[in-house]
Length: 380
Image 1: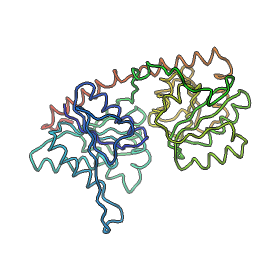
Image 2: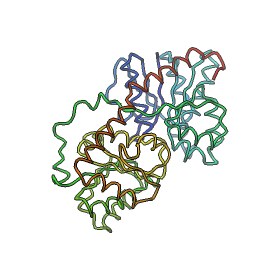
Image 3: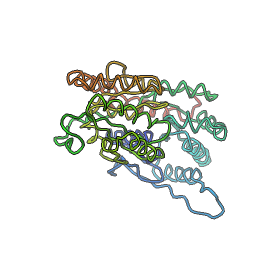
């Protein structure tokens, strides 16, 4: 099948999931076309089955903000016609579903009917999408999609509560590709990060307020009083400078490493013992899943879709949002004893294995096939 995928090309979860999905689909023999303003960060190789089409937005002084949606819609129309695309899969409601719908209508004028699958990832619904300026457009775009999926049951329920949705929403969870992790790094360079007796704790995010970065540091502050440890912070974002200042204020400057954005997440996680995810909300918790597949135990908040990923008392522990004391206490409980830590690490891997892409990919293929066969019918 010829599939066009529209996503953000950044380090964010939706872009990573969309890119990994496209790569896996290409591996199954599908022809995949990525359409976005820059080559996705996880898309390293192009080939016979994987193509990238860049969306150019011409600069015009007339526009205060350049019209990316118009450029994207036009690019979609051109790509569908040129490559005989059969299915359009857009990730993130804004502006991709809206642009996708406009492309569909333009294509219909040429007698081309292409089904559109919209996958909801999180902040497109819970943060940006519910803003009064965007809510009508988001509602319209979702309802005009042929198929709508969400990455967790929690996100599905949030969407139904926040919007007047007429479409059925199918839950297809985010995934991990276990095959990628079978070749364990022989040199994780752990000694470069910490002493042999020190535990390594990691946090990976976009450093936005919703991630509650100060809580990460406060939890670690309490941990290191009881257990020798180092904290590795991976990512960039608006809260990073404040985080660095907080570390300085708490006397943690020499115990916390800020690495910025990295394309070597797996190498970083391979020497980690514990992952902290105290977010205000998470639609799924993809960062936790990536940690777990690397045999890293997780301490998280109990919000959004996280409980669908991190099983309390099995792969790690959960606590209410903002409950730094409980998070620190549970972290120390895991880290203090080698045998307990090893048990949680093994359990984390077992739980994460349930989200292997070999289980999830057929769910998407089934939707593509159903949508394509029903493209002339109003059955969705």
